Image 1 (tube, one colour):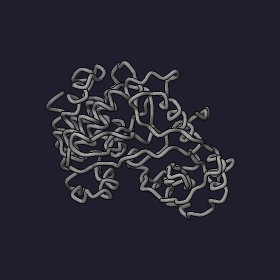
Image 2 (tube, one colour; image 1 turned 60 degrees about the vertical axis):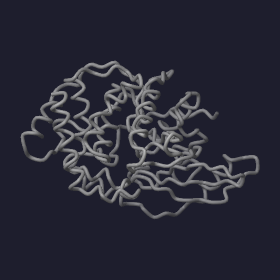
Image 3 (tube, rainbow, N blue to C red; image 1 turned 90 degrees about the vertical axis):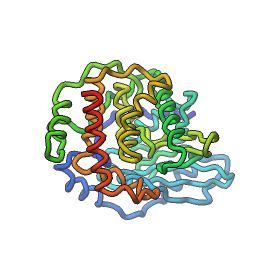
Image 4 (cartoon, helix red, strand yellow; image 1 turned 30 degrees about the vertical axis):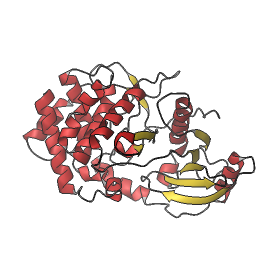
Amino acid sequence: MPKAPNVTEPEPLFRSGRHCADDRREFVEAVLTGLDDHGWTATRAWVAKQLGNGRSVVDVRLLPSGWSSQMRRLTLDDGTDLVQRTFVKPFFRHHGPGLLAREASVLALLAGQEGIPAPGFVAVDTTAEHCDHPTLLMSALPGRVRVDEDDLDRRLDLLAAQLVRIHGVVPAERPRTYQAWTSQDRVRTPNGPLWERAVDVIRRNPPPYEGCFLHRDFHPGNVLFTGTGPGLRITGVVDWVETSWGPADLDVAHCSTALALLHGPAYGLDFRERYEAHGGRDLATAPDHLYWRLLDALHYCPDAAKLAGPWRDLGRDDLTSGVLGARLEAYVDGLLQRYG
């Protein structure tokens, strides 16, 4: 297994849904700069060198991805597939070395972890020394993202059990400490006493916690499934760029918010119980757990719809701004009633 690089990471950059609302215009202008898809000669040569043994790429398909990087599925002449992550846009390319080094290191770590189906690390050129752009090459995993309503209870149990296994990883070296994606000073909520009360909950220092290994962006959009009914299985967990060390409550909170928006507030509210039923780590008591849940939920304010673009691309046209806003409000209200 190739050794992943050790590169000093930059400060966290804007990622979809995680930037301060006041900086949104600057953010959009930045990511719309440098969108021309050209200059892949060096990258193709580098990929060919990584393959070795006379293998070659016979097909390339652009995959759906976020704003920060381009994802491509490379099919080889022997029928196997690889995935290539590339930072093309100048705004993100500047941070590419740290981002790709972090993901490469995590993938190398997880290669020896039973029960965590992460992509296999193949190669990385963090600084574009050999490629046209900073590039990471990894194995492709079977399965697809599921955001529909079929097999929902079974899928949620599988998600909870998978998160428990992720939290059980004991790395030789801890990843960076978690980053909060909002704060009482940055959050912008709708007007009203409900939101004022919610912001008051996070108007404090973070509660003490016993840290563990976090995916930090664990939600249905980063999990691949195969099969249906009793044959339903998780076959992949992807996007390890945000991996960090922190409270298990934070991963539970992030997945819970996504479930509340995707499937309704009750599914988000009850995800803690699913996690605990599968032997998860001890979570914080009510007031402290509420802090972590709202720290995550409030970073979707004032526009919960900013999360839903990829979900709509997968067929969830019902997730309008109105639906998502109402679900987020009901979820926050439910959290305050349950833990406040």
